[in-house]
Image (tube, rainbow, N blue to C red):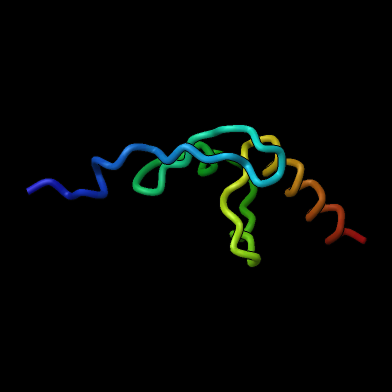
Length: 67
């Protein structure tokens, strides 16, 4: 029997930060798993960020933590 989570295609999302379209794969490897940092999902009910906005948010979080 095939596991349905294995055959789900990547979601197409619009970034909440900039509106850029990108893919997110909840059922397998996703581009964000290759990033050097991890951020929690937004607590305001938002969704994933595009690669550029995720990197900018990580930089801001690192700068805030160092001050």
